Image (cartoon, rainbow, N blue to C red; front, side):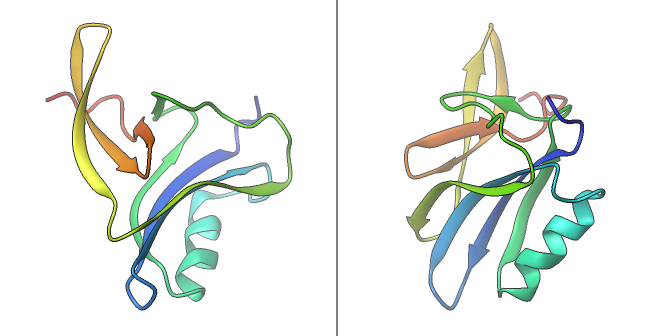
Length: 107
């Protein structure tokens, strides 16, 4: 897996749309990915790289050099919790997709 694998949760207020988007190898730095989404009108909710997030009900994409829209929904992303291996974590949900953006943040 590419060490430059990034995941961002963002919200576009004008469109009332939330997204989870992954990027694998397209950017050297996470801020570059964030900046591109901000330029498109998104408010960044959470940013992660492959070493900090945990997948819950969907996994990483193996193909490189691409954007991957993983989930989209009306309204802001939902902050929730998720029990994984006996540990409760802060989690983010967009549509039916859930992931743990920071595995060090236990509830």
